[in-house]
Each structure stands twice: as C-alpha cells, then as structure tokens.
Length: 329
Image 1 (spheres, helix red, strand yellow):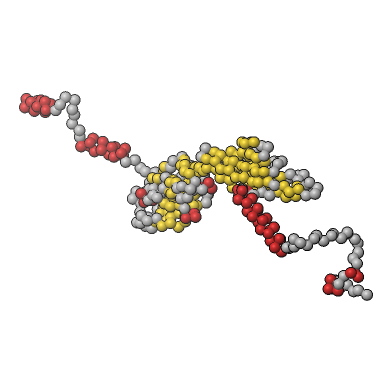
Image 2 (tube, helix red, strand yellow; image 1 turned 135 degrees about the vertical axis):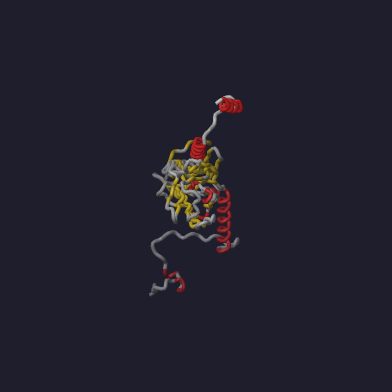
C-alpha cells in the first residue's frame, strides 16, 4: 500500500500543473471533429463580378469561377455563356470537353469574337470578348453542364453587366422638306454615355439647343431636330459626352425661280467645301463644252429675232426644211 502511494506521487510530480491524461477514445473523437470542420462538403456556387467596363473597339474579360459537389469529376462537360437573360437568353459561346480532357473544343463563338480564357476542369469559365461594340452592352451569364455518370448543371442567376463606353459618333444627318416650302434637319448620334446634341448655323449662333426628334433616347442613340432652316448656309450638328465630341454639317441652298419660290434644297452633308468646289468644276466644264459645240463667229452680226406668230410662211421654206409629213401645193 505504501509502495502504491509512492508511485502515484511520482507520477503526479512528473506531470505539469493543470495537465491531464487523454484516453485513446477521446483523442480519436477530437480528431474526427477537426476533420469535419476543416473540409466542409462542397456545393454548387458561382463567383462573378457585378460589372465589367471597357471601351468600344477594345477587349473585355468576363470572370467566372464555380464550385460543385462532385469531387474529382473528369467526365464530359460543356461550358456555355448566354446574353440578355439567364436560362433563356441566346448563347454567344459554347465549348465541350471530352472525358479526361482539359481541352474545351469551341462549338459556338458569335461572330468569332468570344474566346474561353479559363479552364473548366479547374472550375474557371472566364470569357474574353474581342472588338467590343455598343451592341455588346448588356448582361451575360455563365453555365456549366456535367454529363456521363453524373448529370448536373448550374448557371449564374444574376450574371455580369458588361458596360461598353464610346465617344460620340454621328450616324445620320439629313434635310427633309417641311410645310410651306420650308426645310427641317435631323441629326442622329450614338455614344455611351449618350451624347448631348446641339445645332449651330445662320441666325442660330453657336450652341443652340436642339429640339428632341423621333427616336430620342433609343438605346445608345439620340436624335435631335432643327425644325426650321430659315436661311441658306451651313448648319452644324455637334454631339458631345465625357469621352469626346463629333460634328457634321449640312449646306442648304435654295434656288429661286421667276415666282421667287424655293425650287431646290441642296444638302451637302459632311462633304462641305469639297462638294462646292466639285460643283464649280463641273459647271465650268459644262460651260466650256457648250462654247465648243456652238461657236459664234465674231464678225457675224446678230440675226434679228422674228416675232412670234401662229403660222409659218411655207412659201419661204426650202424643200429640205419641210417636215416629212407636210405637202406643199
């Protein structure tokens, strides 16, 4: 009994204060709990940014990564990108990878401008869009599909907003007839942010505000109307936003007849003075051609003009001057 008490005292002396002996059962249980917390079960999810911005004419990358509950999946898979609407929007890109392959063969690339950057085997569906245009502005959705032994699929619900910016560009400038021999002008421009339009011209000054025309605010295009072109001359439409400005001009000339009524409006658009010079050259050539075809002798006095009459003196006409269907007694 005394020997047992002495051995117990030795063991207590060896252990540091506050220590205790763990049983094998307790140690195993604690290890199992640690493994459950350090490796939680995976589930379907997709990580995408809310918005990506890029300028027209450049390229943009749409990032998309995902997780799934199937460990070590190496079966067939398909990567898909849609535009406009989740689950139902038109596809702009699609590729497929065979079992065990990391190469995703492209089956669809709209206009050849969409290219997969990521590796679907490594849970990356990132896409690159080349040669951006304003029409590409919108929302895009990534999707992955598993086939073979596992049939499963997942698609981002909210997608990525692709915001395409562009400096202004005037796409149409025209002059149209109006009531009472008047004319009106229409100017259409596009850009992002949507540009502001101003008219300047004769009796308008510079920076005159334009009246909104048909189609104002339609997408990235805006249209402004100049309702009355009261004077001949150059009218200029200017489009501007935070990225730049653009302008185009139209020239209006009205030719007056005997009644002093306008007979013709001549819009020259962006050709400007070059078109005026071209018209002058053509008019000079036409006048020279008429002089060559109808030369006038300098010593020949001008022939008197005969008075108008309602009949012709047929007896003074030579036979070769007579009409073919006319007989002379």
